[in-house]
Image (tube, rainbow, N blue to C red; front, side):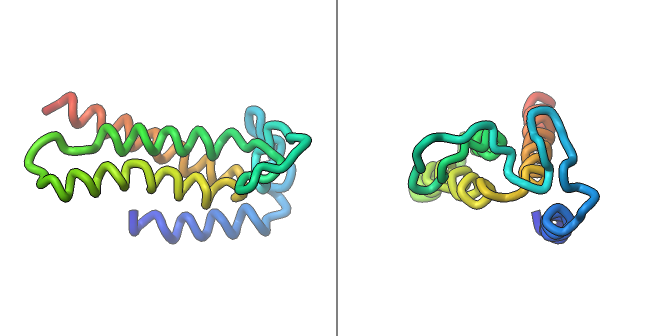
Length: 128
């Protein structure tokens, strides 16, 4: 994860400042330099605002599944098992909150990275 941090910051800056990426489309995303805004609500939700961004929600769900699959079954003390359960919920929600208003290109990068890591984890578990 340490190696991803420079890529994360560089991608964030590129998406926020690049004029070439303004208006770049991908699937339902109208602009990769802005949040994906699937649709707008007539009212405002306290943390989310009045727009529904589907990509951060999908990323949060995928992070939850990825962490759930990587939890160790044996050898953990009751205290560390309780901490893992708390982190299983807090980390995906925290990242979902942080990424909710980020450029969709950045969220797409993190989503694809999480999906590939999940596939890699599942293949490793299957090989054991």
